[in-house]
Length: 378
Ligand SMILES: NC(=O)c1ccc[n+]([C@@H]2O[C@H](COP(=O)([O-])OP(=O)(O)OC[C@H]3O[C@@H](n4cnc5c(N)ncnc54)[C@H](OP(=O)(O)O)[C@@H]3O)[C@@H](O)[C@H]2O)c1
Image: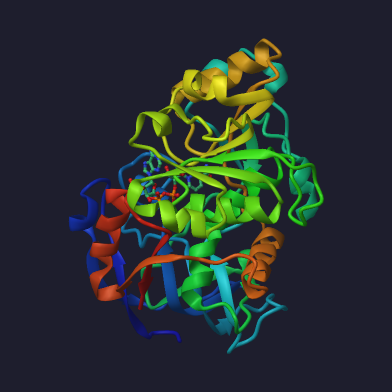
């Protein structure tokens, strides 16, 4: 493909939102030895994509401008690097466009300064196969992990590292696969580990609350919770109550009502775990709704959440706040793609946009009212 030109959408600096996305013609990238070149069929947008554009991960991301955003893709392999053994041209795949050029030490900038005083809480994350995820400790402030360094999803072609590329069975469409990557992996990591439940449903029956259950992460979290044989309470807007029930939630609260704002289970359940997929809910609202050793797994922890995390640790509280940072693993991506293939998990597509209208997809994600996943198709 050397010398071939493709259509891509990129931005040249921080900020500017959808209006700053530019349609360009750029060379098709060349795969390095551990990479595959993909002809993209779908890319999904995550809030982190426009947060990166806003500079919220500055100075780590983007690594350079211009930057072609998004990491979650489904496509077909058209070329493989010299070291790639598990894929060949013509293979359909799902991938996260994320270089693993060495494991880098990601410092949680939000709170590292404060927590440096609490040395005992700095523990390396456990490594190992997929099942070790279940024992992964979230008592982690500094973790060795990979970050989405490359992006590249808003384009006709992109290179993906073999280590975060998985086969896509015929039963899984490119859009379903692209939707799964960050959102599905986050839901899985939030669930199976801190919530101490088992995907085969053999674990103890727990009471779970999923906030923002209609969103990208939340809609996978509800489905995974049901696979784990839990009782699920969920929050969403009024227009999505039937949708969230259809995903399996046992009871649903409209977050704009007083009952929804208080997070009170209509049947009086106390939550063993909360998969918290929105922001702006203080610990004082969660606390009275938790069981005696209930945990709030916060996937967007701000300063207040990190403070609560530290205080609960320091005071040996049984009720804990667990900040979560996704650590993408190939085996976990294989696992959730497999669940979609088996019909146990589904990607709900909120909306599809052609690459020529990528800015509309970007705006829709920034608006924050997607039901499921927003997908861009070249
Ligand atoms: N830690 C990590 O590694 C990680 C990984 C993935 C995502 N995240 C973060 O997790 C957050 C959620 O991501 P996402 O992809 O699920 O977002 P999303 O798809 O954009 O979420 C949109 C949905 O959230 C609902 N919602 C908004 N505020 C709500 C509230 N107060 N209560 C109940 N529902 C509410 C909206 O419903 P309405 O339209 O009715 O308002 C909408 O359906 C983002 O901040 C993202 O950056 C973190």
